[in-house]
Image (cartoon, rainbow, N blue to C red; front, side, top):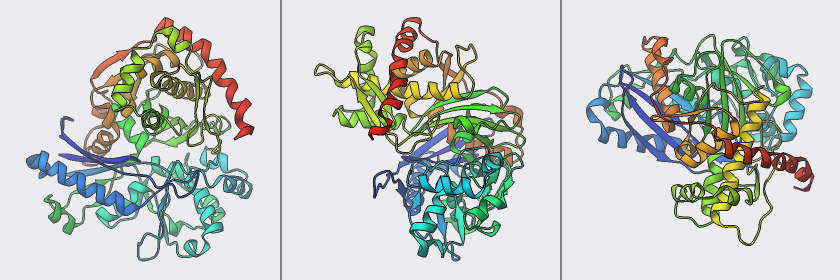
Amino acid sequence: MYLGIDLGTSGLKLLLLDAAHHVHASADAPLTLQRPHPGWSEQHPQDWWLALEAAVAQLRALAPEAWQQVRAIGLSGQMHGAVVLNAQHEVLRPAILWNDGRADAQCTTLEQRVPNSRQITGNLAMPGFTAPKLLWLHEHEPAVFAQVSQVLLPKDWLRLQLTGESVSEMSDASGTLWLDVARRCWSEPMLVACGLTLAHMPHLVEGSQPSGTLRSALARQWGLPQHVMVAGGGGDNASSAVGIGAVNQGQGFVSLGTSGVVFLASDHYQPAPELAVHAFAHALPGRWHQMAVMLSAASAFGWVTQLTGTADEAQLSQQVAGLSLPRRAAAPVFLPYLSGERTPHNNPNASGVFVGLRSNHTAADLAYAVMEGVSFGLMDGLRAMGQSGPSAVPLTLVGGGARSDAWAQLLASALGCPLLRCEGAHTAAALGAARLAWLADGGKLRQVCQNLPTERAFEPDASGAQLLHERYPRYRALYPALINLF
């Protein structure tokens, strides 16, 4: 058995996978965000550990026999978060997360200090990345910065608790702005620009390589065998790609998670920083990927569900499905930048906006506008990656928002390509983490290349696509018109 751990933003998931890649059981535990100031986003690492222990207790109760057969563990997690530790490995402050926008000014400072930073890292300096956060810490919390002995990413902090080892892997490290992504090693010029050295960084492995062994005391406490290996794992999106089999050139997925992602795998390094497209190492050796990211996706739908007082997201999604085309055509237009935006605008101060509200608009109209706005944002990302027209090549749909048929159909029409919703796609990152553990234990890559069974395919709808084609220019015109107002 192989255990996948996925440390998300809104929750932590566990998944048990056997050697034939059948899922035996899964469990999850919720997490909450702290926003002490506008634009800030933090979590306490100890809350991650408490969530892990709660999920472990669930999974042990659900599948006690399978649990006792775990041979290896894989880790997936939210990217870019800064967990700062002192020399005793004590956490110095809450982790600053991927969707935190406080370090905007420090991005300019970093690129001034390292003029060829985009060539080294393959990416624009963005506030969500880890390096600008450490510059912010140096400037605004110097007493804390002075104590920093090590900087870890969220999943790698969990690894430290599991194994006692400070290790990261290539896909997650790509999102720090400290990695030379082409060479797959830490960049000393980027570290020096942040007042750091190689000593502050964890050791690097590939995602499919061993990174350590579960601590004996923890194995006994959890009822696991001794010498359980812990694999390198991957950042959440690279792990999702491994989970659904998107590991070869041209394979990809669209994620409707807390954030929104368009992911395309590649067998070579393809930086495009001028378009705010991410170029990262994949979680597998000799592979990379491009990624367009928007900061609010399924989280925006959760927000509008609460805003309208609807019982739950599934009910609101059903209401959207019942809207006629004329009703959709009369819906307001929504800019989905509730937490700022990355691709293609790279603006942490961008705001969410409804335009065209009328007194007869209902909760379903607002929810449709949110689904449409997020879909347009993902379409922006796909276009930034060079995919500007309809395509017969399908993409897999993953993330919690993927469970909405109405949204999946709308998104297929917006992107102009078939979308495949696979069985268990909402746990793709945890599945990918388990698969990486299996690879690290001697598994063969060809089995990982196999896609998950398709639950349902969504083809672009001609009438829906025409409506979106007519409404998209209004959406695109809003950003430049409103950007200076907020």
